[in-house]
Image (tube, rainbow, N blue to C red; front, side, top):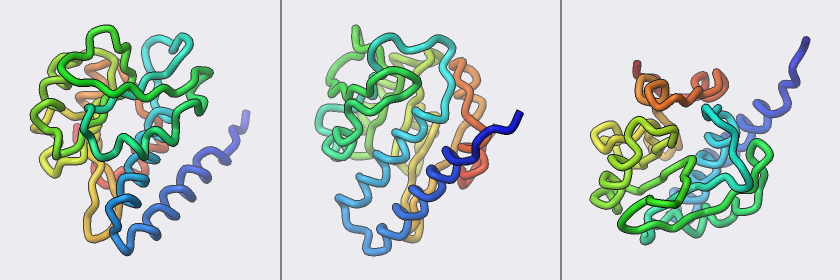
Length: 175
């Protein structure tokens, strides 16, 4: 059975457009690109159990990516509507599928990442030392190009399966 290549082409096209737009490296465009990556990680990741009702992407309260992520609220991911949850202090009761935190929010982000360690929550960070921050994916701006790196061992340990499409596009895959 042949599967459509349309979704991967869309993802690659979106990434190409975002990378091209980043040549000026304007802060807002950088966060828009990171938000688009986070949304696509949601689309191309398998969780151990299906979402019911909403697909929650959690972000630290003062995170500069918040406004960019809000643009994806209401979009569909695996039959559920995306909701952006702004968190501070604790993730209790938030039912996060993805936790994103920026380098500027590393103290609270690391605390939240520790809360979901080994749980089926995809932890994404935009810090150069993202693995030290307990993240599974690092979204990075390198030489005016947006890229991402994946810690495959951490995602597997949490019961998450990243699509081969994501792994193919990653700048680095660490086992």
